[in-house]
Length: 127
View (cartoon, rainbow, N blue to C red):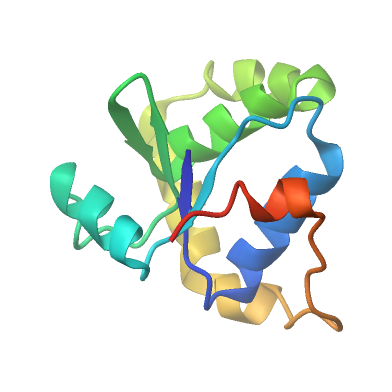
């Protein structure tokens, strides 16, 4: 499950990227400001965290680890990149994630068109 900021263009583009490149289609998406998103962030005591939140096997992963989990989910080259990233020092990965998070509004322009989901994809977006 991926909890994301639906008001953030960078997060929106990340969700679009995952939908376009996934090999499986079992990932659920939850907007962080939805009732379920708020409840999940409270359950995992992550109310103050402004990061993608990856939930897997009753564990929550944030920051670079959530991105690595998303890459692993995508498989192929993305999974290999995630494995390589895990070889780097955690403080370096965390600093890189935080830098991108701080600049995300400048890095991603709003999408030019609305995200059009298939009915199968729509069913994977929980509120």
